[in-house]
Image 1 (spheres, rainbow, N blue to C red):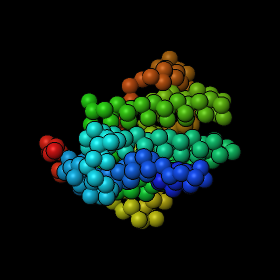
Image 2 (image 1 turned 60 degrees about the vertical axis):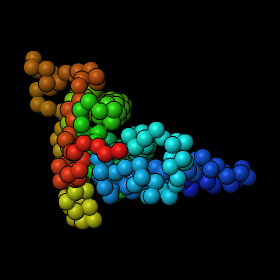
Image 3 (image 1 turned 180 degrees about the vertical axis):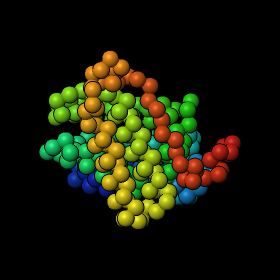
Length: 247
């Protein structure tokens, strides 16, 4: 997944012969926000912390964002857009269903490294029911379910129960977060995680015995079935994130 960076736009601006200060300032704030939230957690980060990390003035901050909730939401939106696009690319370049699955799993396991220390905070806050980030997270899951279901229909020649896809996504989220929390730089743990997810996904996607029996095991319900969210690992949640927010 491509990291948030101001470099491509900056190069385009230079080719046009004029800088794009608005883009640069907004991106600088988002990068600073990722650093501040990743270091302090959500609840224990203030706008002042973001200003210091981004190296911008309060006036500049409020040109682009209403408050810290707004910049955090935009940070999450940017991360999820990049992630979904990375998943689309991973599936598109696979020649076989098995290669597509491996690519998707590798993309999931790279996500914490691509996002950086703020990954755990984004996962924690987007797992809280009733919040705007939770709603956005469910929309991302819906999009991934549709993406995998459409690809399976095209390349496996059959429909897959959306609940199975949701289960695979939940397992991928949980395992990726576990690796991030326990030993993000341990290649052996990451390799074990990759093998585990391949085993889980391959078993889940294999046609079950007696598919289509009266119990409905082979029936594929609508993709709009309510998602089952994967809870964030409490070890990655700063204690301050459970306390009331401070201005």
